[in-house]
Length: 241
Ligand code: ADP
Image (cartoon, rainbow, N blue to C red; front, side):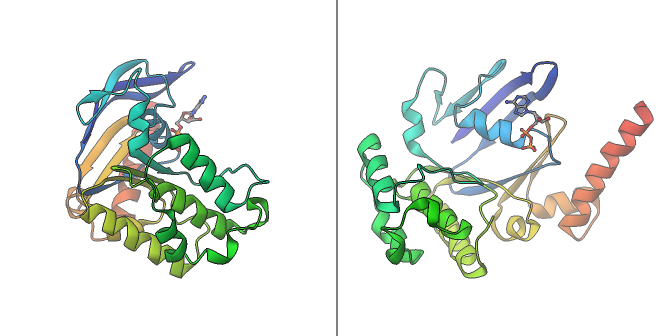
């Protein structure tokens, strides 16, 4: 369970999060949507403990994450672009992470699942973008975390690997994991998300199911519902000017 309570964050004069309040439960997939610059990454970084908040609190399983680093062991994070120690190969990287984390892991099953057996001894710098993304996925799942966070998970994946990753995400949901996702692929949202959390101007504009979002905007297609929200915002800004 993730509880975000009235969080505020500014970078200099720019107020990015302005009192975000949201609760995310186990066994559900939450898709964060919102225009570029609306604060999605900042919100995710806040959950990962990478941002010093100006105000507000984040609780994970009832515990405040401030001054508590151990909670990070329960999170799997798949960034959009993987940055690896380039001279290592996949197995060296996995061994290094196992040494650091000292937790039970199940990398073999994911190496087989993503068919990476033949890439184990190749330097990471020589892997293609899609293969690096699969390595990224293995690192995300291998410690069996309770919370999984995906930032544009489909980036660079071929269609078969993309389907495999989506199936894996759905399986993890069935196991009761709390899953957060940012994506520009609306088909991914329709397929995976139990709830959409729509950020606008640093606040949560909408939280609910895809059907509720469609209903709220009186639209049949998600793409159109989202365009409508963004256009309303632009119209309001024009009036202000
Ligand atoms: P999103 O992920 O929704 O595109 P972000 O959370 O990345 O939005 O960014 C929100 C705003 O905060 C943007 O205007 C961005 O330029 C700014 N921002 C994000 N991180 C920093 C930072 N470390 N320093 C200064 N500004 C930042």
